Image 1 (tube, rainbow, N blue to C red):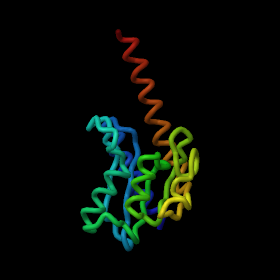
Image 2: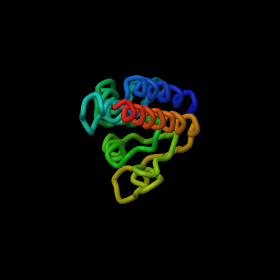
Image 3: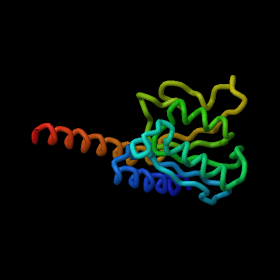
Image 4: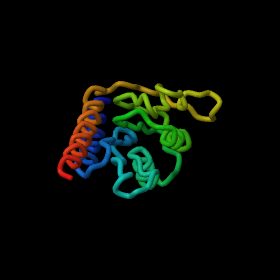
Length: 157
């Protein structure tokens, strides 16, 4: 089932790429039902907090009617950053599944282990690497295309 839900998160990430956003998608599942789906909107909104995970958490809280997202699983295409990891802890999500690692900002496994730090009052079960190649390829292609676009813009000046 993890691959099925991660494919839904990948579909969200592709929506982000289509509008020029960094292709990161998130899906929250509650009792085998998708209750929230989102993708990055940071460039569109010019708001640093509109990451896919935070938008999905907000939607899930509305759907459930509680800030406690117990019995849920968050699927996200890229390892959460410190801001998103903090929101995951605060919303009491018990399980997080992510695709690609983020060597520059990942705070689940890469730089820190925020979701499994027993000094917090909540910890998460973490599954990493689900469809990691597909998730990573989306980001690699997005940034390759962006660099090419910028290069071509400089040439045309």
